[in-house]
Image (cartoon, rainbow, N blue to C red; front, side, top):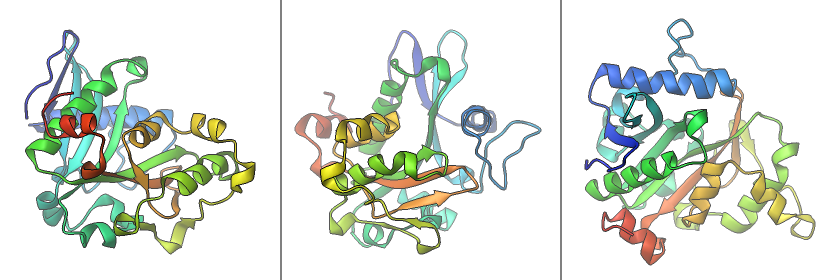
Amino acid sequence: MTRIPSDQFDVTLATSTEDLRAAQRLRYDVFITELGGSGPLVDHDTRLEQDRFDPFYDHLLLREKDSGAVIGVYRLMHPENALKAGGYYCEAEFDLSPLLASGRRVMELGRSCVRADHRGGMAMFHLWSALARYVADHRIDVLFGAASFQGTEIAPIAPSLSLLHQRHLAPPDLRVRAHEKAFQNMDLVAKADLDARTAMTQMPSLMKAYLRSGGYVGEGAFVDHAFNTVDVCLILDTARLSDRQARMYKGQGA
């Protein structure tokens, strides 16, 4: 994968155990310490957020050039690695049958985070640029992954869930569905009563970025009590992107 030039950042794929540990340490800081999540394989002694799927993912690492510190991560699972892993992480939360039966090359995204002091700047842009090149290199047609609202209380996020359901529901050929064991209906606020501007403002930044790129959501949310989140499955079909976005994801620049 081509490196993304920058005076401040460098983006590469993890190539060693040390690289993976650096990603897991940042994930611990964000998902465990900051956001209060947990998981069966989280190592609190060494401060590593990890799961059984980590060895099968490719891990994008965003580093500060001056310090070498990892300040952003993304993990990526293409079909060949999913076969080795015995499936995708999202399959525990969502029925992926429509995606897997589509005949398209799909890739799962997950565990995206940026260190607090670099949020709102150029860091996420560099991760997304690297992701676009990876998508082009691996000939990916459809991206998907769980995106999370923090906490498990539904009432505060009911407007946002409703907006997602009413305006961004995936077409039937790509419409995954949350498993019934923790299925949360998202159509909670009537259209006439929905304040769309407030609903959008309350969404996590990453979720809004996917929507701006033409992303969809699956049917229903999944309440993940262990990780202290309410998850929706985001789906991005590269064939349905705008011309500018499609050029980026084909590695042809903006």
